[in-house]
Image 1 (cartoon, rainbow over the protein chains, first blue to last red):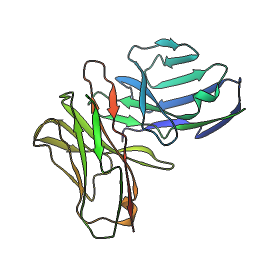
Image 2: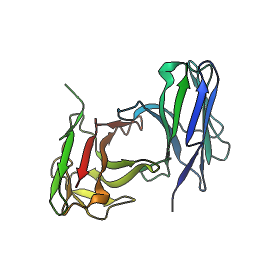
Image 3: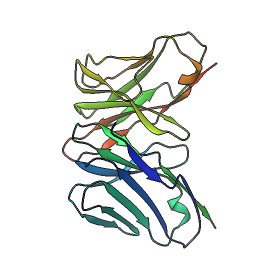
Image 4: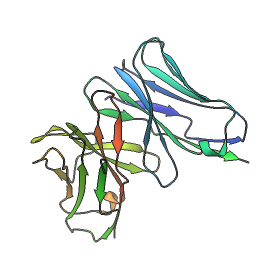
Length: 110
Length: 112
């Protein structure tokens, strides 16, 4: 089946440290999206990556899409308490349905 | 205001009862989705709809029924609720131009 694996499941970091979450698909993706869900909230769209090898930045967040369009990563530089939440990748296999990874829950130690 | 709304936000029901979760969006997005969120499983697709009167199964459709008589509404019905359907349910619509999914606030369902 079309699955998207995401690691790690949990990440605890000291404030100011960096954070990275990874997603991997066994088959080529049409595009991949990233979402953030704050505790008690709903997922909110962060970005969409479409091109092979694409790299996009949003302030302290860097998103990458692999050359083979099978993997992606989200890297946060110098985490802040506002970064707390669960980060999900969501793969589009070209059928309009997004398949979500299991998410990485980020907690920040002040 | 434009957006996507779900109701009820919280529901407690008993095993065997029928429950309907409502979803309404004001953007006229063609695609709408129902996901359930459980610890350790992330967001799993239950059903989706490409347009009014067009629906299809997702990853975990068993025990659920959907309909889409109007573009703006996409209700999800649990015909005979089971404890395993205790979950948080999210409705979403998709902007095809940007690909972005817009989620509702979620409906927390507890089946006793």
